[in-house]
Amino acid sequence: MAGLRGRALIAYILVCTVWGSTYLAIRVGVMHLPPLLFAGIRFVIAGLLLAGIMLAAGDRLPRTSRDWKVLAITGLFLLLGGNAVVVWAEQHVESGAASVFVAAVPLWAAFFDALWPGGTTVFSWRVGVGLALGFLGSALLAGVTPGELMNADLAGPVALTLASASWALGTVYSKRNPTDTSPYVASAVQMLAGGAVITLLGLLLGEADQWRWSRSGIGALAYLVVFGSIVGFTAYAYALRHASATVVGTYAYVNPVVAVLLGWLILHETVTPRTIAAMALILGAVLMIQLSPGAHGKSSPVPEGPRGVPRRRESGA
Image (cartoon, rainbow, N blue to C red):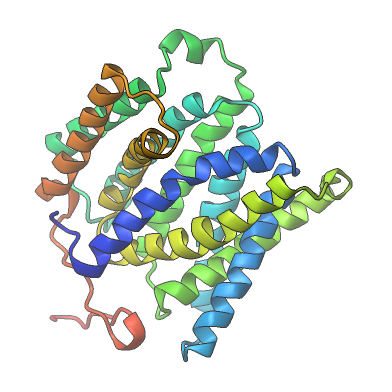
């Protein structure tokens, strides 16, 4: 795939597969736990674990106040504005409808990346067509009609639209403001910053009284800490360092495909002709964007320094 090779491609595949399984865990979690505390505690635990692992392995925390600021802002865009809002919205919107709105992340990412000066995305016709096909494929896969969306409770759809835009904006912001921190420590700092604010909001809104210990809720929390956060989020951060925001954002199109395939293989769910057609549209959209020169612009991936830390390019290099 153009723009994604080696470890970056592996990271992208991990994001597509792991995050494809997290919607179910979130849905189970909000049935038993209050949404903001559920989301916030998840990221605080994951951030502490990841930071501890990386420091024990010899990595280092950010050295400058500027890097701390950039990582904290990115964490708020991605985790407070993005993930926590999705968790809250899944109380009001069924998973099929939610997937349509979340699939708009690449649309927002391409828009922000092309609009914000200094981006690597050139919004060519191939990129535009690919994004449109991916959105249509996600809608077809979910089986959601325009009429169903129009008649739905607007709280969930509006929240999911804002969440998609926030995640995309955080993605582009992090690309515009690189740090001298490894992707793994950067992920830990982002999760700690976002998780702390989300947890504080949950406490201020009185969610502590709604917390109920249950096997299903804690199981969902544990799965999201290990796979959704530590594995998935660090893979996302690594892939983002080595490819454009538009390319990495196409994971949102692959996630529904992964969920359908897992359901068929493990739960023996029925795969209909509509499902096959939707998957063809989604994978075709990803391929079109990956192969489009407009998705990568003129810049090349930044070479890695020690411990996977990207080196800053010197002028003329």
